[in-house]
Amino acid sequence: MPALDDFVHPTVIVSRAFYGVTNLAPIKTAVEGIAEAMINPHGLFVGDNLITMGKRLGFLDDKILMDAFLRNAETVAERGALWRIVTLVWAARTALRVEGDFVECGCYKGNSARIVSEVVGFADMPRHYYLYDLFQHDESMPHHSMLEHSETLVDQVRARFSDMSNVTITQGRVPDSLAVAAPEKIAFMHLDLNNADAEIGALEVLFDRISPGGILILDDFGWMAYQDQMIAEVQWMLKRGYRILELPTGQGLVIK
Ligand SMILES: C[S@@+](CC[C@H](N)C(=O)[O-])C[C@H]1O[C@@H](n2cnc3c(N)ncnc32)[C@H](O)[C@@H]1O
Image 1 (tube, rainbow, N blue to C red):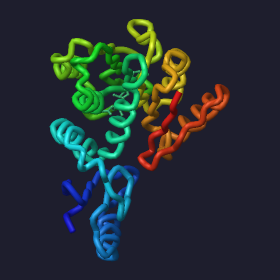
Image 2: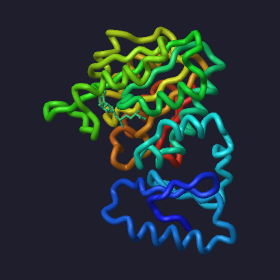
Image 3: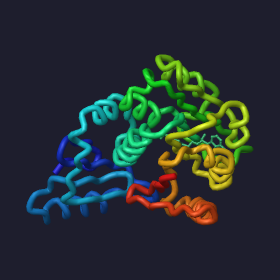
């Protein structure tokens, strides 16, 4: 059994990316117990507050996805979030059947957008990827700070996508910044703002622009720490006749 801070490919994944815990030791002991109890511990996924056992983890055989993931995901949190990336890549690939651009509100370092772009070969597509973020934080701002928020983060993200001329990065507060640049038609949208008001604001502007069959992923939807988002988004969607699927990753899924 690998140690809890290992990332082991291809049959067992154990990450120490857990949130809302004060002590990882009991989790490590529990995971070791699960592995010991199983006839074959393969198919164990541990990380990002998700533990599965005996699952196929078929995405590990997806070389294009895994290569892009391992090239880009560097931190413990980014590596632990593999299954969330799998959801995004599925959504993006599926959305390619319909007309429209790609959108991510809350791109931070551009990690998940970069992986999605590399997997689908976005640079060569006649579509546009719109990325939005504040990229920095001060105490007057309602969003929570992230480790790499800074005055220069926006330039770092622009540099990260400098090989993709069809990616537009807009700095500013969503939904206000959607007035600066936004697509008319959307195939794939990822909302990851950790803020109910901002996400509802983005939905008010952008949801009607999602093509029929287009896909929306709500990153924080099923996380206890962001319950206000679930409450607001369930209400908002029900009024329009849509139901959100809560995924074990904590993401919410809507097919337009
Ligand atoms: C969890 S991070 C996004 C991570 C990114 N989607 C990824 O997968 O790599 C959330 C980001 O949302 C941004 N954010 C929060 N509220 C915002 C708002 N109203 N407008 C723009 N960005 C916002 C924060 O600056 C932060 O970088």
